[in-house]
Image 1 (spheres, rainbow, N blue to C red):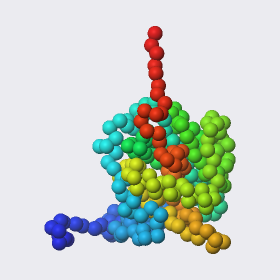
Image 2: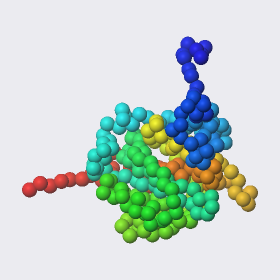
Image 3: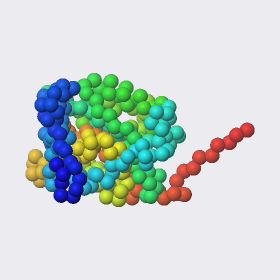
Image 4: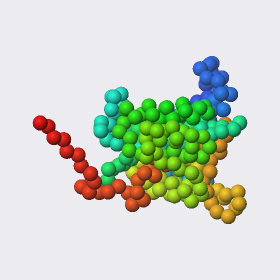
Length: 270
């Protein structure tokens, strides 16, 4: 239809596509892969109710940029995409049990000053409960980047993953969730976003949805607040968002040192 602003708009849902003869996907499988909110937003053209989200759409949207246009110093297909610059890796491991969830990994190029922005260079989702395979996947980034920080949630299988990672990266940081730690991570990420200091590719709707899935709720005891997201096949568990926060937690609360106060590098040629 032609809308009141004079623009032509057409809505095509995944069900419309199937009704029109498209057979490139399985609707039941898509419902398993996405939470109800993600399915409605990404595939049914519906707005998401983010009123209870710790990261509403208005906070996350400004982080989304056209990375191919904006990141002119990032070479994704080069052996060393960012040269000798250090990166931070955040990992949220696979859950356990019958409703076990997937795992999320992000690679963040940290800001060097308050005037720069953190950039999420890569994000990956993994399936399966093999903790050794998860650790090997993380190790695969060792030759591609100069890794300065790896943060892993050690609840459940994360402890075993961290043990394997520690063999080649002794300074791996283990995060064992408490309401206080979750609150600190969420507030730090919110602060970074509010100051316009985080960027990721605009095509990564899964990362956007992952942040929006985190909600502030009471603990089971009802005595304090924490941050939760569903941990089952229907709702996902915001793995990419938590992985991002594991990486960003490397930054001091006051932010990075201003330009000119950090370390420098000198090369000597004979």
